[in-house]
Structure formats: structure tokens, C-alpha cells
Length: 431
Ligand SMILES: NC(=O)C1=CN([C@@H]2O[C@H](COP(=O)(O)OP(=O)(O)OC[C@H]3O[C@@H](n4cnc5c(N)ncnc54)[C@H](O)[C@@H]3O)[C@@H](O)[C@H]2O)C=CC1
Ligand SMILES: O=C(O)CCC(=O)C(=O)O
Image (cartoon, rainbow, N blue to C red; front, side):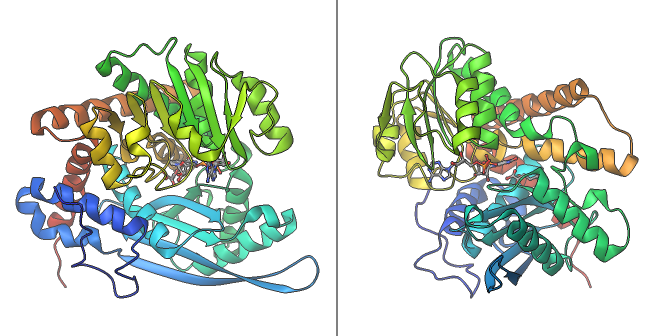
């Protein structure tokens, strides 16, 4: 295993000294390559996004001024199907980040065997500074700019950080106006009234819970009474916290962008949801025992830790202090390769993002299938199918990890990259 970033395949537009999340992904690919056998001759495919679109997104502000925002859509790999992956609105979005997120979608979609490649999009904007009208104009302009490359059989966006069903509805409507047809299948994570799927909103958190239950069984951790700490209380962290609490776990700490709260006896999660809906964050929650500094979150002892916010949160700096048994990666890319090594050495079981948070895209796949057939399934049916896919994926990954004596991350990459590169090989290169 090597910790050095793979510098041999750098696209010319990235700075070799500051690769960001894309460098993290390249290191993960370096770790899987020795396990790919003859398919490793294709591995360069995984180190180069297929297509990168950078767009200028101008909008008229409510005060009449014009503001410009930088947007991206990256299609990392389409060997197994159309591109698929969310759209992020965040002030720190970078091309390196969107490239990495698109590549993790390639791996994730192959890991749970849904027939998609990997893509992701984003706009470098703090949406909290925009009015609803400005947000709609931004979303519509961005959709128009990327409409060149998206479509129900080309690339299908979905929600990610700071985007939701409303944003997806605007994206669908903008695309439909351009194409002159309904095009519900162009995005997933839509409102139910517009061809959305029951269960999609909860799907990622539910998937995190399902694989968490499997991991806990393997590690001999009882969910009832387990201490769970969650970073990020949005779509993923909020739902995962609810499901763990409903199963009897104690949510002892929650951190979001507004603060860090703890309660040794277990936070009232339903009450916390109400507080967040009213105030915009967890800070000030009356049900907390204490409010901690940001960095102190990593000192809270837990049985299960769920990073469900942003990338590169668990690093060589805090990994030695983390006292937990299982890390369930609800977020994409929360753990750096250096931290992976430190925690693995300390016998912490890490269920990687590309497996743990695949429930969202799995139900997005169900939504897309329902839109094409115009036949909608019951929530029970959706949850049962999701649970089965997540359990089967976990057990396949677990088996590979045991057989090859590798981490769950490398095992997931082995399974997924093999599927991607087999498809690549059999498709051939000519003309
Ligand atoms: N929404 C989905 O279906 C999926 C999301 N993910 C990943 O899960 C993560 C969270 O996404 P969502 O829950 O959808 O986003 P969200 O926008 O619903 O929630 C994000 C949460 O993270 C918190 N947060 C932001 N910055 C933070 C910081 N610096 N420190 C602590 N907390 C911070 C926010 O306060 C919020 O609670 C992201 O990494 C996303 O890519 C992965 C798979 C699917
Ligand atoms: O539902 C989807 O299509 C993609 C969700 C996503 O962006 C992710 O899994 O990171």
C-alpha cells in the first residue's frame, strides 16, 4: 500500500501539489489496482473523467445586479450506463471535488450493480445567501447550461448537499421546456407529485442503517443501547439518526454547520428535527446536555460514528483520537487514506461511502424505472427491495474483504472496478 498520490495520470487542469478530493480518489485507485489482474491494463480509464463541463451561471439578483457563479457537471465514466449522481450547491465546491464525487458515483453504482456510470455536478454558491427566486433562477440557468449533456438516457442528476426535491422539480421543468416533452426521467429525487419515488428522501439514511446493522452484527455490537455519534443532520445524517434511535440506539452527539451538541443519555431525535426545522441548525437545542467546540466532536466516545456531512473530515490529525468501533460513511469521501490506515490499524471497522451511502442512488434507480414505465410501486416494496440490495452488497463485499484480507473499502473497489472495467473491455475501443 502506498500513501503517495498517484501523480502519473493527472489531467493538465489540476495542480499536482493540491489535488484535493481527486487526489484522495486516485490513492484509492492505486490501492485497488494490484487486485484487478489482467483488467489493470484498463485502470487509466478510472483515473480520467470521461467528460468535464464547466459553466458560467449568471443570474439577476433581486436588487437588479448581475451575479455570476461557477458550475460543473462531470461525467466520470459511462461504461455501464448513463451518468448518474447528485448536484451540490455549496460555497466550497471545486472542480477537484466534483471530479472525485463523480468517480465515487462510478464505483458506488457498480458496487450495488445499478446500471449506471458515474457523474456529479455542483455550483460554487452558498444557497443560504439567495432568495427563493434567486435560487430558482440559478437552478434553471445551470440546468440550461448543462442540458447539452444531461438527459434520461445520458446523465441523470439528483439531490446532494443543499439541493432537494424543489430544486429537482425546477431542473426537470427547465429541461422539459428545452426538450418540449415531459422528461420526468431526467432527474431523480423529485417530488412525489412529479414522478418522484416513495422512499427516496429517506433512502440514503435507510441504506446507512441497513449496512450499519450488518456491520454491527459482524462486530458483535448490539444496536439497542449502542452509542451513536452523527456529523451532519441533513437528508442523510438526520434520517440515519432517526432510524438508529428507533432501533434503540442512543444518539449521544450530533454536529452540523451550526454547532456540536451532546447528551450522554441520548438526544431526543424527533425533537431535534423540529428544532432544526425551526432554527436552521442543531445549535441551541434545549435537549442537549452540553455544546462543544467543533473539534471536540471527535473526542466523543461511541460504538458507531456516522460522518454524514462533507469530505475529508476524518484525517491523520483526528483519527488517532477517535474512539469508536464502526464508522459508517454516510458522506462521500469523509475519511482520508492516511486516516483509513490509522483507524484500520486500530481495528476500527470502516464501512465505506461507496457502499454505505448507496441506498440513495439505488432508490433513484427505482424512481427512474418507475418514471419510464409510468407504474409506481408501494413504499413497502421499495424499502424491501432497497434492504435486499444493500444486504447483498454488504455480504459480497464482506466476503471479498475476508478472502483477500483487505479493508471493506478496497473490497468494494475490487468488486466495483472489476464490473466497470469488464464492461469497458467488452465494449472495445474502435473506431
Ligand atoms: N442526499 C443523498 O441522497 C446523498 C448524500 N450523500 C452525501 O451525504 C453527505 C450529506 O448530504 P445530505 O445529507 O444530502 O446534505 P444536506 O444538505 O441535507 O445536509 C448536510 C448536513 O451537513 C451539515 N454540515 C455542512 N457543513 C458542515 C461542517 N463543516 N461540519 C459539520 N456539519 C456540516 C449541514 O449542517 C447539514 O446538516 C454529503 O457528503 C453527500 O454527498 C451521499 C449519498 C446520497
Ligand atoms: O441519487 C442519485 O442519483 C445520486 C445520489 C448521490 O449523489 C450520491 O450517492 O452521492
